[in-house]
Length: 375
Image 1 (cartoon, rainbow, N blue to C red):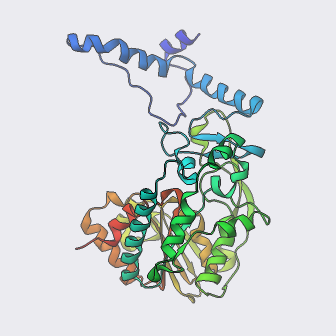
Image 2 (image 1 turned 45 degrees about the vertical axis):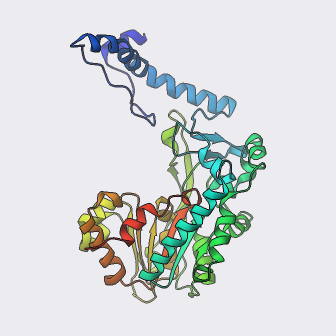
Image 3 (image 1 turned 120 degrees about the vertical axis):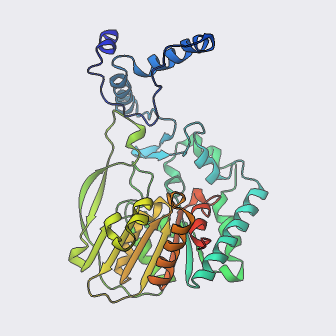
């Protein structure tokens, strides 16, 4: 049956794996190509034989539902149904978890992170004096007790990376209170509700809302202008791509911004005044109070800013959110134009930089392209 299906080219099912499958080899044109052809053909057949996609999905489903096993190197099955994203690279599984635990992170590495983050914040403060850096504790840190016992035993052998780095940054007079790592606060929030959904990597759902409230009231000293509520519904998990054949849904709330008197917009259409730049960035959003009162917030982030941006509209008259993940696609002149728009034309009252904790060693690379852009 696999042979017949392969030859017919039908009923294969779609590829849902998180990788590029091998391409069909071309017929050899010389002796060198002849020698390479068997390996290329073997790789192609391994990736495309009949029923392969179906078998991958069935295998994943059976292992997950019968054994509680997660058949993906970048995911780790935890306790009580938790699934953890453990690495951004398939060839280095658990590397993100090990980094956060402090495994193979030397004293020199930590000093380099302090120096880099300090230099970045000095630049940020020159552009806008009222600027802050938020490093968001990710799920393997916030829910460390839900990690498998063998991972917890490994992590107990090392000193976690973030707390010491953040403490040293806040010891610098110019940065005191400007670098925020709200791990105790997020631990406390677990008693009140879900800080992270069980089946996600990103900071989604209503979990970011109490952190936005705590930041706005404790650090930024703003009164609340409105309250956001929403209805529950399921959305696909952001780690679904790693586990074809297993349906991973995340219960979340659809925030009713209109009820709170807020115009919420996500995507390119939110910024017609710089449409081309917004299209290159992709992950942009804008939240404006219809009555226009309240301060202005500029939020610059990696992918972890998306989930929290809208909740700041409870305290701000207008919030602009820009993810820096694709800013390298913009030429220097466009980055300089964007810099002028967001820092001068928008003229925010405060700037908040938001990145997840595992990015502490490289977070500054993308936003620095914006902060250091010149005409």
